[in-house]
Length: 441
Image (cartoon, rainbow, N blue to C red; front, top):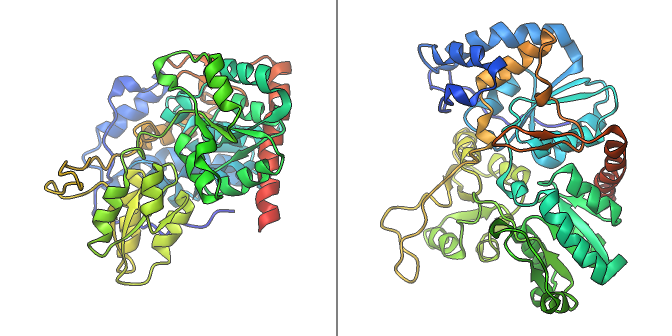
C-alpha cells in the first residue's frame, strides 16, 4: 500500500497545469477537453465541479474494484486530484506492485507513462485490466532503448560471451526488455534498489548488461565500490543502429558492467559544480541517481523519488533543501515543505548571474517531464467516463508486451503465445527484483 503524499489543494490557488492543444487528444477525449478548456478558470472548485460529473459516477459504478494511480512526476495537480478521488501516488517500484498486492482491484487506471502501466500489467492477474489515461505519455529514456535497438546489440554480445551475460533492466524499459532480463536469469531494478540488484548480479560472476540508463548504472557501480574503469559505455543509440566491431568487443571482454548509453534529459543537466554552488551557500543538496556521477558524488544524498519525497516530509523546520530531479516533483515538494517551514528549491534554479568555476553560466532549465505531463484532468475525466460507459478506446488498454510509438500512436501488440512467453520471462525478472528487495529488508 502507498502512503498519502501530504499535499493539499488550496481552494483559491489556480491549478498549475497548462492546457494541452485540442488536436493532441484522441477523438473520444476531445469533448471532455473542449468542456475543460471552456471553464472560466482553473481553480480547484471549478475543476472539481467538472471532474465530479465524470469521476463520481465512475467511482460509484466500479466501487472498490477501481484503483487510480499516479507517479510523483505527474505535472500540475494530477497527483492531488488522484488522491482526492481515493487514488494512490507512488514511485515506479510501488506502482509496479499494486496489482500484485491488491488482487481485488479489477480496473486500474494510471496517470503516468506507458512503461509504468505495462509493469503493472506484467504482474497483474488475468481478471485485472490496466488502462493508461494517455498512451502518448512515454519516457525519452525508454524511447532510446526499444527492443529493436537493444536486441541486435545483445545478439552480438551473446555471440561473443554466451551465458557469461546477465541483464539488469531498469524499470524504465518496456516489457520486451524486462523479458530479456528474465531470459538471461537477470532482474529488473529501480533507482531505489539498483545497488541491491547489481550487487546480487555481481555474485553470479557474470558480465552485467545494464539497460538503459548509463548514469544510474555508473552511479550504482560507484556506490558498490566497483572499478569504474571496468564499466564499458556502448555507443549512443540516438545516432542510429549500433554495430560492435571486434576492437570494441575485445574491450568489453575486460569489463564487469556494460552500460547502454541512454539517459534522462531532465537529469543530465545537473553537475557537481551546481551542487557545490548551493552547498557553499549553506543548502543541503539531494539528487536523483539518474543524474551524472559528479553531481551524485558531490551531493549530500541521492535516491529515488520516494527517498526525496520522504526527505522533505521528514525534514526539521528551518531546513533548506535543494533537490535535483524533475521540475513538477520539486514544485510539489516545495508545497509540502512549506507546511513544516522547510524551504525547497530546484537544483537548476540558479540566479542568472551564477557561473561555474570556469566562468560559464549554469544551465538553468528547471524542466519537468514533458511526456508525463500529457496526462491532465480531461484525460482522467474521459478515461473514467468512457470506461463506465463501456466505450474506452482499446489503445488505452495496456497489455504486457505492447509497444507504442508515442508520436504516431501506432501499437504493436504481440500474438497471445508470444505475449505469454514474454510474461513468463518479464515476470520472472520483476519477481527476482522483489525477492532481492524483500530479502534485504
